[in-house]
Image (cartoon, rainbow, N blue to C red; front, top):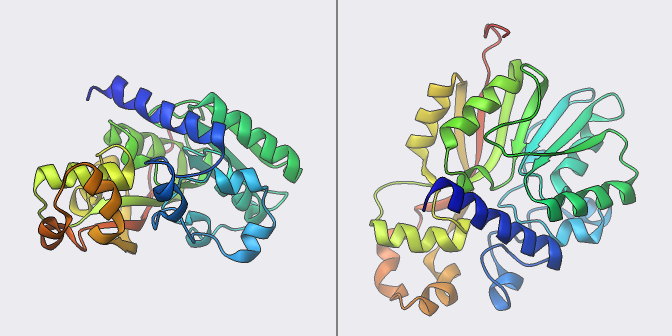
Length: 272
């Protein structure tokens, strides 16, 4: 797929999710209700204090706000903020002296997120329209960048990471949840499984992710698996595609995962 086609496919899937405020981006019906990817990411205390629509529209694969160690007074940016769940949770952590930005390219998601912001009376929140490949914020303007299962959807991940590096202040932290792969996987099986996990088959191998972070200028890089997917989890989806699930299992089990990806912009990085 061309970059523009991928962006439009992602936009449409997220628009549909915003309109129905529920399910997963990869399907409907049974898969939408029991997906092991998007389920059980937030604890009960977090869920009880958020608008229902924010929870129903969540398409993430992790909980970056719980892992990013946000501090009062920090400025945080969520790349691909969707219905706003991680932005609203971040806003609480950084407090009234901090600020949480959400960036999304989908009008329907932005409308939903701003309504959720209104319901929460979150005054230290701002939702921006734009693409994660071209962040509409100045250089060196945020302390932390988070994202929840969105970077894997981009057709230009190098550009995303370069932009993340640009807007982070020296010493700033990159702390995202994303889908990654590990080890050799037959290309046809990789594409089919990633269509289930990530909607668009674009997740990076963890070694490629590290290399791209280094190329963008980051250091202190870490990739920590948080949820490993089994082919059995995708049996219904893959069977519908005519794939022999039992035959492919030995080649892919344990090689697809959600992970917490950490990196730091060096404190010595020159301000632009």
